[in-house]
Image (cartoon, rainbow, N blue to C red; front, side):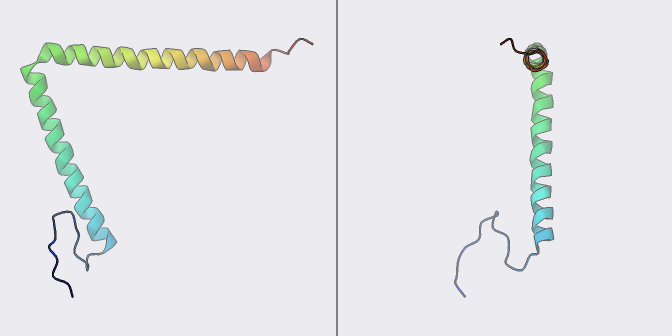
Length: 85
């Protein structure tokens, strides 16, 4: 057996896949919780900036959806009209 050091990301050799997945799930849950708390604090500290960011994100999503609908409607229109010979 070798004498190697383990860091926190290296699972022990006798853990099962399910135990490893549970550990990763707990790490992810903790990271998401920390990110959510940081976001809430940032919104509390800078509410106008948060509103501006949310409005910009909503506009970007709406613009993308509108553009996609135009592209899809153009594709459908060209697929249904017969070509002139």
